[in-house]
Length: 227
Image (cartoon, rainbow, N blue to C red; front, side):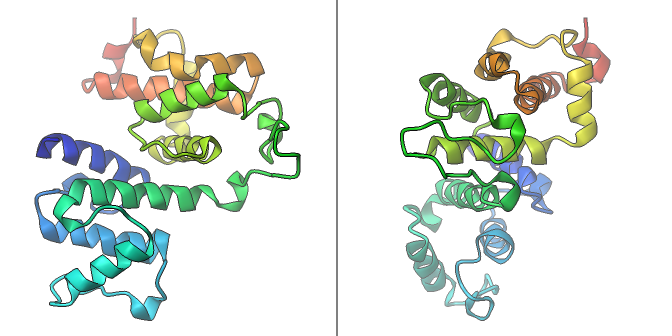
């Protein structure tokens, strides 16, 4: 992967988790890479006690510390593969964020039964269906989220990225502009089949995905995206 593409993808994900310097991040700058590792551990991952975290990225002990840290959280990459390492760590952070109380999946039903999310808006969704799995995978690919083996966890990460990437006003604009923004069908298809569930929140996410892609594909004035 080229440096430019790696920077673009990582900046997008860093923005999604509210990293303060996401817009100036440079994967080729080792200090940038290490600062992200420190920030992720301090703010989101928190696998080590606070007094055991090494924040001095220039310390001669940094490499040993980092290798121990990555081994502890079972990251398969190291600093020699900075792009892959950070991508994995950000995904780990997203996973941990998705376990927050408001997005916790209630698992009080038998293993093979339909599993529902705690909010009523998701009560009609069968998260074990092939349709759900296929469309969540498509949405994750569209949002450049690494695939997770647990489809429910991946779905929560998709929701989290959309909620953190788009402000409330942008989500409302997505609904207002639905049908007027020129978006390729392929952008909307990953979530479009969720509409049959009549789930308002998923409809909102579907429109948000389309609006997000419209924004990314039309960097000029917003009006240029309309018919």
